[in-house]
Amino acid sequence: MTGKLAEDLAAREKADKPVRVGLVGCGEMGTDIVTQVTRMPGIRVAAAVDVDPARVRAAVRIAELDTPVVDCASADRVDAVIDQGSMACCDDFGTIFEAENIDVVIDATGVPDIGAQVAIGAMEHGKHIVMMNVEADVTIGPYLLSRAQQAGVVYTLGAGDEPSSTMELIHFVRSLGAPIVAAGKGKNNPLDPTAVPADYEEEAARRNMNPRMLVEFIDGSKAMIEMVAIANATGLVPDVPGMHGPNASRDTLQDVLCPREDGGVLYRKGVVDYTVSPDVAPAVFVIAEMSHPRLRERMHDLKLGPGPYYTFIRPYHLTSLEVPLSAAEAVLYGSATMHPLPVPTSEVTALAKRDLPAGTRLDAIGESCYHGWADTREDAVAKRALPLGLAYNAVTTRDIAAGEYLTYDNCTPDDSQLIVRLRREQDRMLGGA
Image 1 (cartoon, helix red, strand yellow):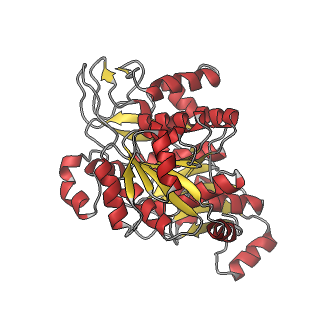
Image 2 (cartoon, helix red, strand yellow):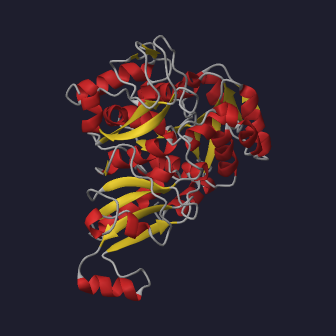
Image 3 (cartoon, rainbow, N blue to C red):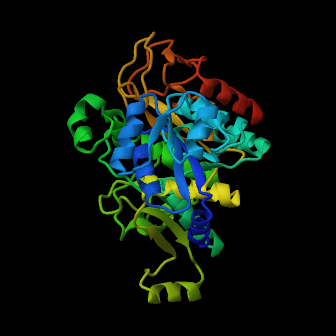
């Protein structure tokens, strides 16, 4: 984040010209955003959208925001409500796309197809788009980036999530000219690829989470999604299918996530991976190589070890609390916190959690049918693997055993979903893979 941001937001506050955010989704993350923005100068949530408008009002109450909330069914009404200093509340996100008083849209839904609809709708109406929906980004990110460039708007993932927090370290290390050996995160929850929501309802209620979202973390899907987002934004790759996921502590990361010939687990340098060691989460890290003896002498003096591999760590990521910073930078500077490269290196595929008979209609990420798995794009294409973001509502065309890949040969995606059609466009854009 630029050092000018606080100063420029303060100037916006003084001039009574705040950055006006249209928020889509008022669940756990959306409520956090409303609460955080309330404490920030020069930016406000001008309109919020949820299929259940009561969630918008609940978010406002939790945020202790005294701004009136007004139901709106048209863009003109949204503009009028914002002009009078109130917050517009809608159940149709198309309404805020058409409103002139919205500068930037934040998607906080986490549903791949909704993410596709929100991103395209926002861009078609000249709005910058901040995606918390990493599930959509790893499925059609290059296509969305190309559409944003055509529309002259910013497409960015949100600050504060593990991918964008890791990117801060990647930019820093690359600026020093140090080759990246590995980049990743500490996994926040115990890993159980067979987890299903019914087993985690009590924990989810205790943590104010949707059980499906909690299971998306526990079954490893979210780690795969986040690491592939980093890979596709940097050119890094998973070293092996599913990555290694070792139990490497903060003190041993550089000794484990390094080449096998140096005592580590990696077959190559330049990878994404994660650790299940509980003392790393919620940190993100980059392992860099500094081989010159003078640099290693200095790093040793600075208590960072003998090298040649060194761990750079950000001990926190603030998830939704940092997202408004990306919205502000998109509007004020036309800059993105993080976006994919034009050609992806990696893919989030899916493995069956259980035996799936032919004719099974698949449920959502984090439910009972499948979990995410990271592959290089080359391997995914060779396997004809179905991207994770296309699995929801797909129908199996033959029996699939637990642990087997979902593929275009054993599943038919739901073509009524926009994300399925846009993925087809992306595949054509990238050469038909």
